[in-house]
Image (cartoon, rainbow, N blue to C red; front, side):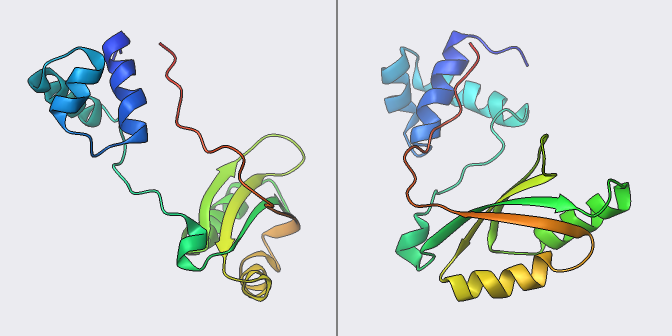
Length: 152
């Protein structure tokens, strides 16, 4: 799907407030409500918008510790990657996990209530094959949580 300037404007608005009415969205970007409705439907159908979600503050639900964890696998083989991805997919504490370049294979973002919970989760997820090395960084404060910037 080729996006135009209006599609990019719609994406900027709905990333900040996906519950905005079509009328209010149209007023902000200079389109009719029906045009906004049609364009949003097309963006969803094309997979540009992949989910409409609520972003929850982890601290408000008792998940007071966020960690960013670099994980290196014990071997660079497809079965090791499949095994690790299955482990991560089954772990509710893992908010995101990215296959990355550099000294580690994966970067995971994890939210837990306490360091004891992280230790238990770490033992469950990261001790033994296919994991070789783990480097954990505790987030002190999130200084910016951004929306995706459109290329247009």
